[in-house]
Length: 475
Length: 80
Image 1 (cartoon, one colour):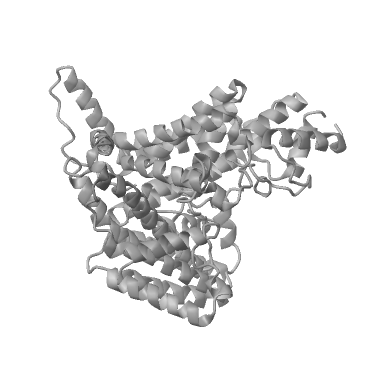
Image 2: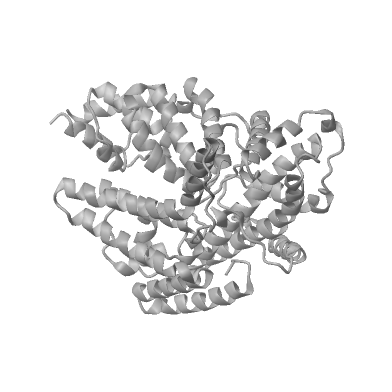
């Protein structure tokens, strides 16, 4: 059941009505509606793995209590590490086992072996990366005393199975989410309509921008050797915009849906296309994942290595971004992507500029740096799109040659106006939670409703009859 | 060590690491209130404080920090 499907609209309408009807009953009643909705939602998407996720959630609930209530320090540690091995072991089995098995076989065969690849791909439970990081973060926080343990199973399961964020994030922190479940959520018209506007912007980004850019980009990646330099060079930024529209669109739909249920979620994007350096990019791109990695990977490692000065910082950054890369999946391209990010951080770290706050330049003084970063990240994200490392390498080699000066073979004009509107709006509202945030308070009603009408028209015109999947579902 | 003695030395360290003094040393000051104090610079600030006060923190102590008040108390507790 995708957000953009008639099934979801019916499902959400039912949950919405029931949930707000429970406002007069109790917080628990509201939580039970959310939990039942989440279980149904996941069961609909992936019935085979509903039991697995339920079992994992129950295990983590119990482990949280065990860590909190055990007095002896060594035993607390045992429970904690058991939790880490359990969660990341499950993730590794489903997400990475096939990759490591096949890579190992390749290695053996290089030395004259005759082993075969896994004949059966292991099916990936939807949302397992997002799920794992949320429950693992919870256990780490309980262990470190950063959060009070959750003793109410309904609260814990409602947190884990909250359907707006279940399949593809944001990676929501327990300490932000759980306290919201203790009190009755009162119907707040401003929050609900803000959620609806955020969903509208998300659908526009996904259905009009991402889904129309996808075939243009796909065509280039399907025939890299046959594409000229200028075509490859143009397809790179188009893919970055496609990915941004796809994933920020998804996030806006998820966050907006949750807002309509009175629960705002973590912000996931804040104008990442317009940044002046690499550290700013990662503070604005997939924020919920990066901040998780910073808190639970970078901070402990850099703490351990803090006496090593800049070398320690560099090692911590490389490990962190390698983890960011590997999080996306089992492919050498993702690992290379992570390593390249580490390399981009080197000048900042070695010059000591990480610690110096951003200059108070006017925005137009930052434009050259922003354009440079946009080109750099566009070329880097080729690694995310390419099927393997050799394809990515072929892509890069294809750019600098005589065909760079030909007219690109990409029919961008059909999508040009919506694309211009999208990028323009994202630029204009780059500091905000979403592009339509101030629409209700700062825009004349006529302008507001005309723009909603235009967006909806564009969405209806663009939506194909086929359901298009979200890129980040695969991660 | 008295809080009054600790506060100016924390302030000095923050200015040295972040390169500005656009913040007020209140107990309820948090990292997001201070420009440039993010997860990347956090560890430089922690190491800076360890040098300034000649103390060693534990990771768990750092994870429990909530605001400037708790940081001052943590440093104070090292001198009891």
